[in-house]
Image (cartoon, rainbow, N blue to C red):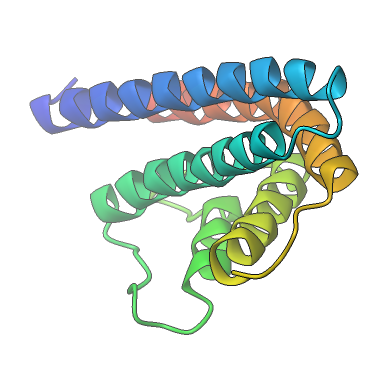
Length: 157
């Protein structure tokens, strides 16, 4: 395996470990929140972790786009959704797709939540919505883990 690909795989694996850590933190916070639904600080903390979880997925996508030189520029309208869409595409002769339809839907929901979380300053978080999203994030961990393993295996062939 060429050195450039080894470095790339190491970077991807490091980012995947960060994603797993954030998933673990989301799970821990959601367990605590389920036993104290009126805890606004815990609701906000879980929402912040979900925000960070999406950002960690996006960082992984940026690594891939940069490596294969098929990136979307930060200044474009729809940058975030465009980046996720790009990861769903198999680019023949360049790279395999990373994100399955199931992962795409869940990641896109995280993206939408992240947008609301970042831009709705006077918005009071709905504890039930935050918990539902954390449950979907739990599903995403396994689904995306399989997507990632397939992507990596295909690259290494």
